[in-house]
Amino acid sequence: MSSYTAPRAGSLEPKAGPRNEYRHSYRDGRTDLLGRGWLGFAQVIETDMQTHAVTTTSYDNRTMFGSAYPFAEKPRLREKRMALSDGHLFNERLTTTTYTTIKAKGAPDGRYIAVIPDTLRQQEFEAPAQLTINVFIQPPWYQANFNIQIDDVTYATDIRSGMSTGPRLEPLGSHNISEVAGRGNDLKKYAITVAGDCDANGNVTLAAGDNKTCTFTNVLSEAVVCSVFDVSYANLTPPSDSIFISGRQNEQGMACVPSGEFGMCRKAFGHCHTLETGEPVYFNIFDDDYLHVVGPADAIFIQDQNYQGNSGASKACLADGTCRKWFGPAPLGDGRTVDCLVFDDGSLNRAGPSDAVFIPYPIPSAGEACIPSPTPTATCRRWFGLWSAHKK
Image (cartoon, rainbow, N blue to C red; front, top):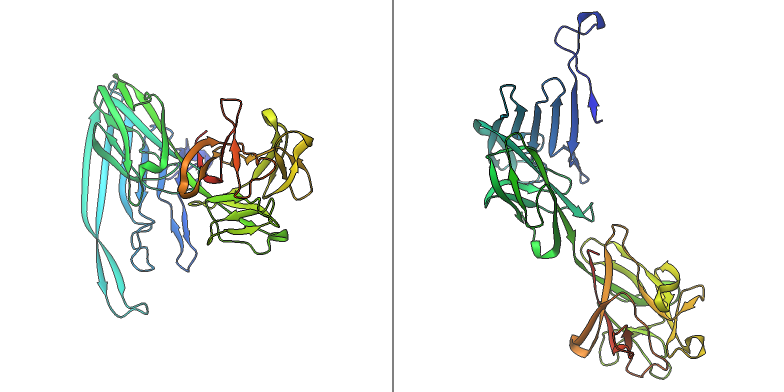
């Protein structure tokens, strides 16, 4: 539900007069699947369409004690903002509630938790400008915590994808907006862009009456791992970030992952996924200049045969027998791309990244994988892998 109309007090009948209209939106609803059930929303936003006052109520539906969520559905912060009619001023009222938790023994799980309101703090502010900061993550279903700072002062904590600070009252002049890692997060995992009314460095200037918005988009960068396997995914190996294609006798074209002296080899490679979010990663096969693309597919196998008779490359093939010269990861559904490196034993002599790989013909006994190079000769190493899903 995004909105409904609530009548004035005493105006339940149409003849009673005009009606007040309120619009509601909800963010980050959660349900515990282990038995606790519905935990409520992290934010409920109410807009009074007559006065344009916006009331945002925030809840903590994530903090756990044992299996309990003691703060779920208990308001921790209520913010009411509106423009005043006597000029370019905005009014903000903050009500902050803190709670005391009491733990006692005797419950079936060994403890009982009581939550008692401890402190109720009310504040009111006026200022000539407003600033809203929105936060998004790609992939959108990945949840992580970010804190928002304005001029190096933390204004909002544990903001997650799709959430907002709401309009905040700010003095006139220049300000710098920044993100810092929230609980359990690490900014090194993201490519971060800033857009809207902020410049690329998070700078924004506010004038009287401004109501500006800045948006942070955090694109998760994460590793990708793949397995090798036989027909119908038989003998599937544990995931690995490194693969070589063997040219040894009786193993020509087999895909191998590190294991012992000679590796663990199977007919095909694939069944890949991102390491943190578990998103499937598929492959395309194609000819020079990315022509004749076929895919995406979950499995690639290499034939130790000269593609088109004179290409100097082995065939990269799908399960239906369709073959091309090159193979490479397909873009992810959330828009991120996947690249790989080629390298020698011990991850030495790395080259890349690249989204296109071919296996030379004939295949050297120790294996070789090649990526495009600015020179007429491709760049080749023994292994390919160390994939990364990242912003395009």
